[in-house]
Image (cartoon, rainbow, N blue to C red; front, top):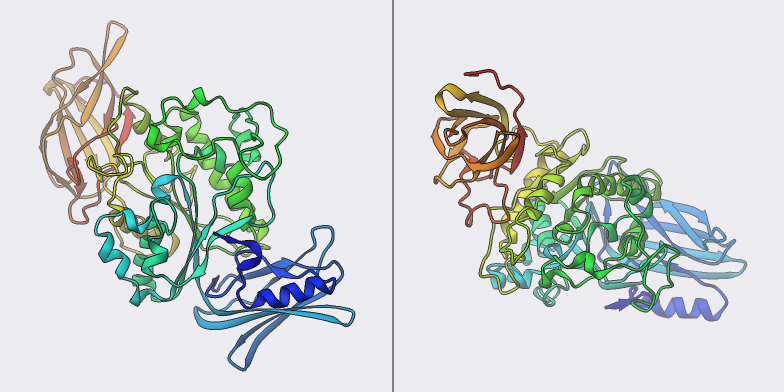
Length: 538
């Protein structure tokens, strides 16, 4: 872990001299050597703290050439300064210098080997926190860094706070070039495997610098990553920050968390703070001034039995609030509706708990649309992971080790949604029409893509209603063609009211779900659909 004053290497001596002379001056905690700044069309933000009333000149250089200068003042009462650089093309390296002048006293800070590219923030709980050391083929993945020195990585230290912090309290990994040591520092430390592999796949396509920031903590519900504003939108009851767990002061909310609220969360997941907003305050809000390209998110397991029914509100609300905050904090440079990717929950072997927790969270992750982007989640993209189960994972089945496929599917979504790549298949087939053939005891399901069907698992279910009662029954696959899958509904003596697919915690074995895209190996996502047309024979 790197404490704040030690992020800047050789600058530390200058910083100490400046303080001894009565001048306080530093960069924000995440501005250091090897960083990546967001490229054009946005302008990158450089900011920090200084002595009120002082003038700050920020200079961007390449070798002996001065590319640009920006001038600002240190503002009270925040004691902060901020400039927006002119948009820069991808590339580098550059140097960034900041000089503070107050009367006759000058202090200069400098960071080196700065690149311009796309900056992605990665956040969530333990499946995002898992490091490259923990994935399949870890040795090979850890050694595969030589071709990716233009990808730079940064990891936020685990902290929580009762109030919104302006800057990070600590950093686990300052901006660095990737090495086997900092990609696999340990289990659930740094660097995030999903984040790294996502960035690596992106770099293979983009061929320009990529900056990756990991800010995640295992066992944490979405409420911990949400501001009070976004939780209020969804009517979520407030929870008090419990003093004594961290160095920061207590909040003024209403009551401590009742740990019984989390009694059904898998034991290997309950490792992080669960109080509302504490991680937003300490690990996300301090990054708000940064210009971003987008965010990728892997979280939801901790909400399996905690505010699960609200997740279809709390997740879209978090996305909207993060977008507002980063747009405002970056002086309008981060896109107002920046791309937001996420991983739909994988599989888990439940122990004495409801089998509906995971499938309902998966559905709520899409705001109950079944796919993204949608009206509630514009600019979103999703990686389906329910077929990437791992019953033998040494970290528990809730932590599957195939993060390569997760990252690959995520990067396809980013290429389509964030980068506008046309004619790219980035999600599995989705049902666009359901046709009941009750006289034949069949149901036709028409997909929007060509499908590949494998196996005959009873993964489809129908809601069969009679005598004012409904129950779910298996609906075996009957026949299929390029776009149409026919199901047998003859087991229902009454009315078929709904259809659902993969509505279980563990829908299928590894990469063996029944329905995939015909050529891309992308699985059809789970869904539930209510059937309103009950006309006989149609």
